[in-house]
Structures are given as structure tokens and as C-alpha cells.
Image 1 (cartoon, helix red, strand yellow):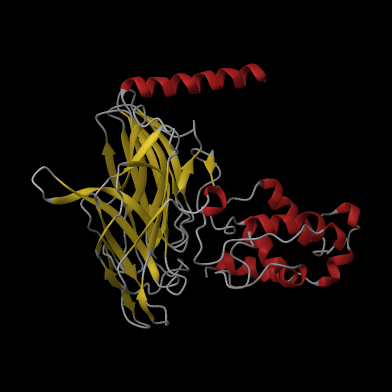
Image 2 (image 1 turned 60 degrees about the vertical axis):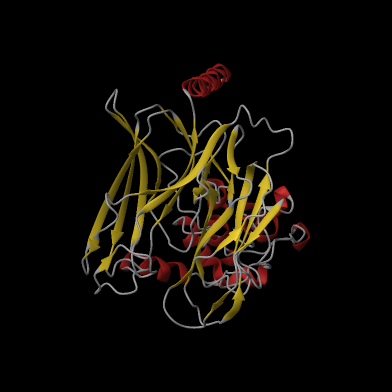
Length: 437
């Protein structure tokens, strides 16, 4: 831990119960009335028995001892864990875990007042959450319409990184447009499943099996992916699914482990004919796929990609490993020479791989020829609290202790008419907003 964070932690933990009587209940928030609802809506999904949070936050008695640390973590925007800058780029996001400034202020005021309980009769009723091993999207969408499992693999208790790359029949009988997709590690191997990527394989005109397109991508912390309205990510009929599952043993052996991907299809009345094709791709940032970070050194990598047709960027998900600390996505408009930052994560954490999904109508629109600029920063010094060994040279590779340099981006491929239509809809929205002021 660096000196600044250590000093902040010492200061935060200096809080004592004697402060509890410094203000009256009318002057400050209480746990029962305000803070319990913030904790319930934003923290308990992980901080409850059997979940991944290191402590449980299901009651005042459980939360109260951690109040100073909660204050520090929310002020530094380390919790809830959602690595996306609040002051740059597109801010209209779906499934946004970030606390509002108002909620942060409420927690700070509560802790500064001594973390009072308040009136127990004002507590909210308990809230149900999906357990580990259950579909996270099911609360909104119901159970998946179709599931596909990898073939079994014996995960050892100890050892180095392992990869399991089977191919299985998809079981899909006809072409369908995907509404949402989620990859679910088994409950037993939830801690050792580092990532699980899947792609469709179809037969070409010569009967050869070839890669068709990405199905899904999973890494620690990811919820799933939802396809926006008017776009179709196709699940092809009579296909296979190729898996790339990366295990990193965590001390618990799991025999015959299987990873499952769940697919929710678009409704029967979905207008597939007028939908634009969407796909999910990994865009490389290192200009060739190789780099080397010296001991106690730092590095920046950069990658570029352009399209010969207009596109809409539906989501952005950085992917780095333990030395990665930040990533940004910009767009360069060659006709004007202008650069614009679309999204940035300055506090990257390999434990939380969020797919930042833009709200409908706020997705970045790129004209033909515009260039995506992806930049990543790495810190191989002792100042990086997640660095396992700053004395090591670190190269690009697949192992957890290697580094990666890419971003997953969901792209809807438009034609000029579709591009102009979206521009007009956004201009009309701006005009309405101006008129309402």
C-alpha cells in the first residue's frame, strides 16, 4: 500500500464511538433511515454470507465496525468496485455501480456523526439476491432461453495457469438474434475461473469448420452483456461453440468442472430484417501484441482501429492484468483533426472486469474513417498495491502474472442511412432539452 493510502487508512480508523453523540439525530443521517438503503442497494450483493465480499454487511451490527473504512473507500470511489471515471467521457451507462455524489455525502456525514443507528422501525425489509452459481440477469430477464456447457475438466487444487479449450455442439436449431448473454462459472470453481471466452464455429461452403464470431466473454466481476434495441448479434443454427477457459488454481480441487453460457433470445416479434448486425471483438492495444515492462518500471501501450463504414459503440470493457492501472478510449476524426475521449478508467482493478454499456441513444457514433485510439498504462513498481513482484520483468502473455493489452468492444455496424437517423434523433433530443431549460 502506498504512503498516501496508508495515511488515509490510519486517519479513517482513528474514528471512535465517542463521536456518536456529537450531533442530534435531526442533524445527520442514520443507519436505519438512509445508510441501510444505500448499503442494501449497492453493497450487500457481495457483502453477505456465501458471497465474495470479505465481510458481511446485512445488519447494523455488521456494518458499524467497518464504518471508517467504508467512508474512505466510497470517498476514493474504490467501492462499489466500478472502474470508470466520473468526470470524463460518456456518463450515461446501464448497470452503473457508481455511487451518486449524494449517497457518498450521506455516508460521510453518517460516519462523521458517529455512525448512529437511529430508529430501528425505519429499517427497510431484507432484500433477496442471487446466490453464487445463479444467473445474475435472471432477475430482469427470467431464466435463459438456451444454455450451452463446456465439457468437464478436472481443476487441481494447486499449480500454475491452466487452459481448457473444448468444442461442443451449440444445440441451436435456427438462426436467432441474441438479446442478452451471460457466462456462469460453476459455484465450486468460481474463485479459480479466471476467464471463460466462447465463440461460434460454423461450416463454410466447402464444409470446413471456421470461426463465425464471438458468443461471450467472462472475467472476474463481469455481469453479462445485453444487446441494445435495433441490433442483432446472431446465434447461428447448426453451429459449434469453441471455449477458451483459463483456470488459476485457488487451493480447492474441482473435479469435472463445467462452465455454462446462457442465451436470452430477442422476442418473437423482433424485427430482424431491419436490425443492424452487432458483434463483440477484442481490440489490441500494443501494436503487434508484444511488449516488456522492466522491473520497477512503467509502460504505456496504444492501439488503433478504424472502420470503412459508420459504427456505433455499444459497450467498452478494458482488460489488463495485475500491473495494469488505467485505460482510455478516444476517437480521432480525420476530417477535422479533433480527438475526443469517450471513456476512461483511471483506477483499473483486475478483480473487476466490467462491461461498461452505454445507455440507448448515448452510445458513441463514429463516422466512416474515424479511428478508435485505445491507450493503456502499466505500473510495475512497488507503488502498485496489486503488483505481486516489482523485481520481475513482465511481458505480454496469457498467464495471470503476464500482462494483457486489449479492450472488448461491442460494435453495431451501421450504413449511412442508419448513422444519419441516429444523429437526427440525438439532435432532436438536444433541441427538446434546450427548450425545456
